[in-house]
Length: 339
Ligand code: PEP
Ligand code: MN
Image (cartoon, rainbow, N blue to C red; front, side, top):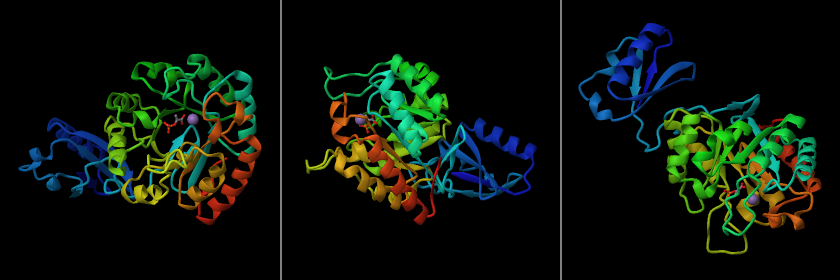
C-alpha cells in the first residue's frame, strides 16, 4: 500500500503519520514521486481494516499495491529510478557501461584492461575476486588481494568498482573496496545474502538466476529493498534453455518487460548471457536498442589465456568498437552513455 501525501503536508503531520504506522507494525519507506511525498508501507495490511488512514491530516489518498513485489514495483513508484552512485547516474536516460576481466588475475593485467576500457568510455570497472566457479578445482579468485587491485585501478582512472559478494560473512571486506556489490546469478535467491546487502545500504547489482522467472527476480530485489536499500540495479544475464549453441539464452525481452513492472534500472550482460565472443557486439547493440540502462562486458587483453570465461571475453580493441556503436544507438533511443 502507498500513501500519497498532500503537496503542502507539514513535517509534524508526516512524522505523526509515520509514527502511527510504525506503531501498527509497518516498515515505512518515504520518497518523492511526481512532486509529492509518498509513504510506502510494508507489513500486514489487515490491521488497517478499522483505521481510516485517508482521514489522517496531510493524506491525499491511499493506494493499494496488488503485486507481490511492492517496493520495487512500478505501482509503487511510477517514475523510473535514477540511481546516483558517486556521481555516476544509472536509469532513466542514463546508461552506463561496466567492463573488465571475468576474474582479477594479477595487478598488471587489471591496470591494462582498466586503462583501455576507461579510454573507450566504461565508467565502472568489473572483476571477480571471489569467483562462483562450477568446479571447486577451478580458479576461485584472488580474494582481498584482487579487491585491492580493483580499488587501486579504479581510483587511478576515476572509475567505480563492481565486484561479486558470495558470502554474507565477507560483506565488510567487500564493502571496504567496492562501490557496487554484485550478487551473482547463482546467489539470486540466497535470501540471507540479499538481506545483508539490503541492510548494508551499499549499492548493488542483482543478476537474474539461471532458471529464475522475472517475478522471482523481482521478488529477490524486493528482499534487498525491504531492508531499506533502493540502490538496486537488475541485470539480465541469460537463462538456461534447451539449446547448447549459446551458454545461456539472453532474454532481451526482459528489459521492456521488467521496465513495465518495476522502476529499478536494468542492465544487460551479453558476456555471460551468450558465452560467445561473436555474440557480444550484436547483443550489446540490441540491449541498448531495447532500452537497457547499461551493459556489463567481459574484456581481457588475451582472451585465449584468460583464467576464466575466455570464450566470452572480447579484447580492448573490440570493446572500443562496441562502445562507439552503443553510443550511437543510445542516442537513437533517447539515452546517453554516462562518461
Ligand atoms: C560474473 O559476472 O562474474 C558472473 C559470475 O556472472 P553470473 O553470476 O551472471 O554467472
Ligand atoms: Mn565471467
